[in-house]
Image (cartoon, rainbow, N blue to C red):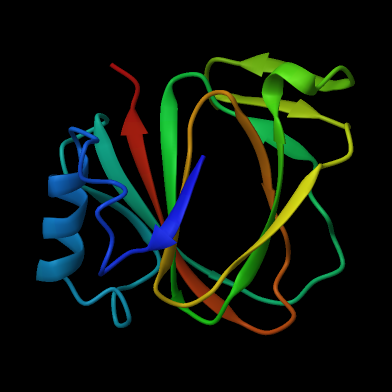
Length: 147
């Protein structure tokens, strides 16, 4: 996992797909875009713009095998729970190739707050669970196909 200020960071520059993500953010108004999926490079790189609202549900930890997630807070902030996948033992739902998700009921070991302008990258070894915000939040989830 990597977490850093999106606009000022050099933390992501070594990632081969980051230039395309930065270019997309620079050339598109994510504040005014309709919620939904936008293809950048087909299924290899796309973004999901989501407007989350406060709710009581607390999703379990999830992990992906086929995609890396870069989650960027556009407006507001949200928490993400995290635990190394290698430390997870309580399988809630087996891996679904169709949905690219594995769910675990393990407790998280870390809570991160993703504030506006902050991005977090979750790799296949990162079990994570974005938590419901206390107020409305807009975020972009870039999905990057694992090479």
